[in-house]
Length: 468
Ligand SMILES: Nc1ncnc2c1ncn2[C@@H]1O[C@H](COP(=O)(O)OP(=O)(O)OP(=O)(O)O)[C@@H](O)[C@H]1O
Ligand SMILES: [Mg+2]
Image 1: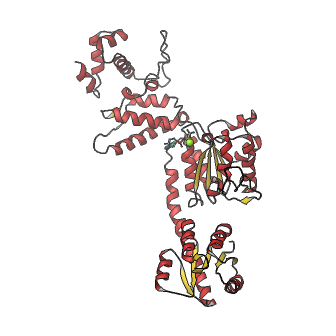
Image 2: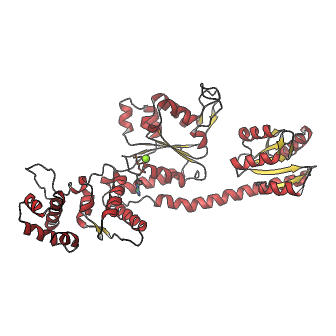
Image 3: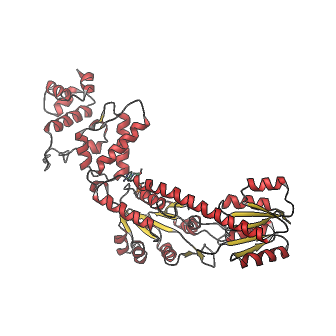
């Protein structure tokens, strides 16, 4: 492990010198500051693990520095040093998160023990976090529902990525397939879980802003840059950045992203030096990036670099019975929302059939919306065809088109004629706003026949009540 770095803050140069000599001889790296302003600056540039902090400084109190440090980096160990160990000072400092307190003149042996304790504390904190993360990580992939082969494959690969140290992943999948969900799960299950997860939709930002958004800028980089600004990459330091819709990024910026991946470094806009970066990039696209790059709309080299690890998230229509698992999942959610009022038991078999055949262009998101809507409107025990959106209820199994020479194709596995009849009867009934005569006309049968057909199923008392 890298050596720990100590920032020594004291306005007395000879004290700093003496402390510096000692801690260097114990194997620490060091940096020094002589005032509040210098301390704050050095804290940001040097990123110390430990701060030895004098309280009486020429331009203010070390306690202010302490507060600032703890605001920004609560994990940093701060040891206060003062010639004036008064009770109020001590209490304020310890409340403010100081690790310990040492009186002046500093006894080196005491300092050494305190520093060792500090490292120990830091290590323990890290271990606690690690344990917490391990508990949480099991959960993150559990949120991804699906037992079909293509989903299992995607989840398997994602888990392996999470456990690895690869710095780039590409998630490819249609809209609503769960790219966001996968990206979060990978972050949660990784060693980076405690560090930030930063998500940005590249399509949502104008091209001229995106670079400074991602990389930040230096003071004076352009007219409005009055002070330096951190970019999202810096904010994600140690963690994960999710670049959604990466296909929308301009070619010039693509080159910069490639450099970030190759060199683990970046440059702020207007900056002159490279800054080190430890961030995993999860890029996502709902377009086929390979095709895009072959059509020269996306840099081939960036595509190759990103696709070293590519996770294909399958569309819902290729997930077989998963659609039913997901439907149950969202029905259960809807039930929980309306705890005692009503309780849906599932899908009618005919609806399940429709679900399995539907194209689901909006994938899981579309399914979720369909169930949410139906569960609000439905009064019975099951989700029926009645409250499905038109493209689902009319796309019912065998009826391909609405024109006059419809040909009904019998599905290979057969179909329940009663169910087909019922669905058609209901559709006619709905389309005519419950006018039995007109509905019967649409079906080329008599009113009585239609009434009979609508009444027949036991699960539907509602229609017959309203219309007999
Ligand atoms: N396998 C799954 N199990 C449970 N929920 C899922 C699954 N896949 C997707 N979802 C849910 O579906 C919705 C859409 O998923 P998500 O936002 O991750 O899709 P996306 O691929 O990022 O879509 P877009 O390309 O439109 O951004 C979310 O509510 C998500 O929780
Ligand atoms: Mg998304």
